[in-house]
Length: 320
Image: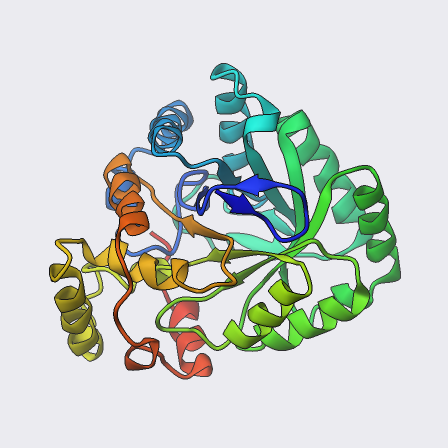
């Protein structure tokens, strides 16, 4: 456990993100197998609750969700209520700005549509509050970019300031090869308490900007630490084979799994407060927990890709 920047919130080093648990389709490698291709909503809710139970028993006390994660907020809210989780014992973060459009289908023309307007903020904040209630601690702009203009939208910024004054921490998540530029602009606004960014062995380019944000007191949450499965043995890309062997060798020296070793690289960064596990099964959750007991001994430079290449590859991952 550690403090989340200067927010006053105490968080577990590992968190659980529900991107792969709240909807039938997602871009993680092998996602369909993780859900056993059973997309009946009650079954998916039961499955999500099993993973949430395993996460809780593993010591995870930080949970991340979003309006666009299908029924993710609904599943999480029902779990929090049914398990009688005290709001003071857990930190829950959600995000607004994407609208789920897949209609509970694995394949869809568009799974989510970005709209960073004040009207969407107001509507989605109301929806998130209804599902999460008093458990909602942090509300974030989903995938803020300079191109979206959200950081220049006066009406949105006023809404975020009002929310912050009510006691909810305000944050933003980042995406794309210009994460650092977006974060630099966000720091200038003196508004955000938390930033959620992609940092992993393949895409570490935002690291210096996160170190600066941490120095300024922001809480740092890392998403996609396993690169949507590309940093696991599910990645059969021949171009990744030599990196996978290297990761396997590092893991074998500590009798660890590859995913735990990749996660340990993120946990080793001094500015990383929470590292999100994207576990979609109980087995994955328990495997990711091992990262807390593993020491990162590798060199990030041995794995890193150019940021533009990383995001181009991510953009073509298949929803499954």
